[in-house]
Image (cartoon, rainbow, N blue to C red):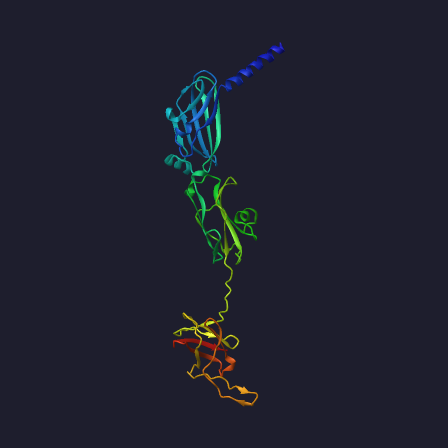
Length: 371
């Protein structure tokens, strides 16, 4: 008796599994660029039983589990064997869009905003309890762009508080609950690229829930150091997971410029407000012309326009002194570059003017100061 009862229960279970397996949704043909009531009803269904009347319900939700669209069909004939159900051949019983920004966007544009979505459909027999459901995740990132704009990759900035500019393709109000954009900046080590630095190094600046495409590096964040490299990136977050991100770019905060000592002053044909300070009581000057002069005539005047003469030279053999001499004979140091030793002149502290004529008789001037 017990054996007969167990046998009966086993047969009933097998029949139940057989009934449930008679209708099965194999896959869907949903397209992120064709989110219409008919478009989300395109599925392939296997019917291992006889022809039957069924209904189909399709639902699409975002990563925050908000419903974007729900479609229910009128009963239609599901034939035995494999069925490719095309939405445009079906009569719809109802269509409902979500009362949220993404639902409105889908209703108007018939496409999905960038993000992660969940699609489910249920097929149900009208005259029996035959039913099957099918779900899949949809990634719609291919329809969007997310990129950095400025500073350009490997650019040099002149401010410790740069404006970091990025861009993406859709309005901020299309983000689902739990989705937001985040900017990350990190100092880079020697020979480290930006992607590695942003991923592995401790960030010096993080800002989440961005609502604008321009983010100024804040004054209260860690101060950028001159000469150092920094990497930055913008990431899209959904439920705590990075679902999209820009390339990582780097910039360098410009080091202090080393002001080089311009040893040779440039002579001009007209004086201006600038002047040259004699270096170690020596005057180094140059002038530009198309050829190199082999002979130049120089004279130096003080602020009173008095000619500065050379010091008397003493002849040690005869123990006599020669008188002060002029004109000056500057030492040639290279192509149109000259040097005058001011120690050889009766020159005092203050502002002076050097006048020089080349072989063509052209006059060149230099105002200089003797310390």
